[in-house]
Figure 1 (cartoon, rainbow, N blue to C red):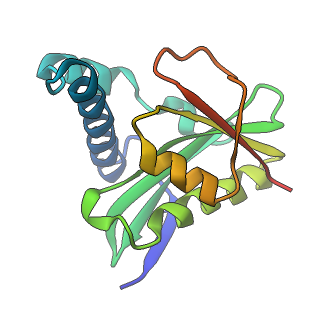
Figure 2: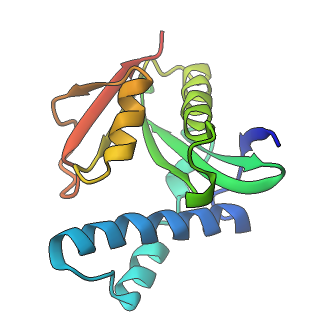
Length: 164
């Protein structure tokens, strides 16, 4: 089986299913760690609906969907900064059964290339302490931990990489 990565509208059925899976996993991980429970279903639905992905549309952003053997398997997106010199990486996710096959690195590199093609010279991102797999991925791909670049209440680690 092979990987393919291509732009996808943030409101496509594949992108919406990936967003739901991503948000459910990161939300449940946070609540299980901090409160010993999964996300309240009503809260989950409100938060999924509130984050439409509208910022992940050209020309100021992009959502990429990876497919493995033709089936949607993961996503990554970015939003350009107001001056266009930086891009913020977001929604990096693979379905659990697709992990460990190289798809995450492929997605991040594709997002870097697309951001560079749109003029970004630096990729930035934030993540949480409990998302250890994500932090390891970013370090392996050359991202360095930096000072905070936003005030997101859930962000605990910030990374940046020059896009050359």
